[in-house]
Length: 495
Image 1: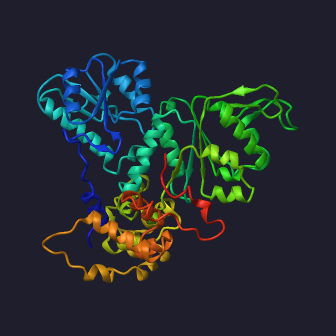
Image 2: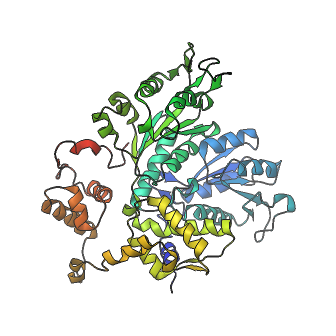
Image 3: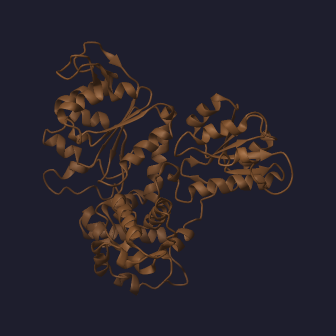
């Protein structure tokens, strides 16, 4: 049986290149290289890399380098042989899970050389300076290795579909901004926690703490003290004062997961903190101020919660300055091969296995299943298959029955597609797609849910294409009666 998923992954490994060379550019996300001062021929190397479309800058080989890495989040850091480069490079590699790759230049000729014992495990690659073109190629190969799973892979966001590229581009723009409040919306399992960490890690705030709390998982009487802290004697068991998450995260980021589970009285205190940066500890009288970016997340319809008076309207609109909607996996079918391959690689390392991929039949089941649990469910399915499997390939019998049963409802070809014949004159695919979307909306009276069903799409995927083809104004959203506008602001990535 063919390894369909791995083959599909290889077919998807074609980059959008900048017009001037090989530097990969994803929307507004440009691959970047930091050259440490003192590296040989650094000016020439920088010029050559910039010609290839990379963003290049330099920093001194000192403690300031770590701050420069945290601020700029380069893909690769280039070192020379002088100074204490090995120890500094080790510090760069130790910055965390998403630290940049490191390359060391030796001022000599010939092929790449093996690392000295002290350099093993520190530098990802060691190259000679000459020829300079080969050195640039080596740097490009390192960056390509990072980006093969998509523009957000370095932060754990796997996928190369248009929706994921747009989401990652938005993540980078938010991270680079001074935005103090972000609202992440999406179904359970879509990766809201990963996106929150990515915004933090890609920002200048990454040198400060990232603190998180699930507002729905903490007992109501403890949420306030967890967030705001408390003074000694504030309540019976308060034998010492305690710092809350906002104080601990000063200068960094606070992630409030399941914000809809917050009590109304705490919502008013959070609103004050969002607007003024000020708050009081439980039992305290002193006004405290913090500078922390707040990222709130929810898998519920907050507009509906506002109508039901379970969520403050003023807080909702204050949080919704920058809303980000994460699409469900059923609208990201083209990303399933990348995600499956990514999980297989991770579990191979964890379980000490050598699973090469997914069989052709199993791949069909994975791509046809609707994934109500989204990416989290896919990860669990791959883990289960690898634990129960006894070979080097995941087979249909290793998949849960609900995944295998999805096959019967998925036809291999639509009758309209089967009857269509391409002529020698060709066809404008963009106009063809636009026409199909317009017809589906006309047939359904502008009902996006029904139009999406006619095209075999999720509504988020349909709205993405409507936006792409400029059809929103022609087909304003159809009201389905009272409460129909509850999720009006939740169905597209917005800035």
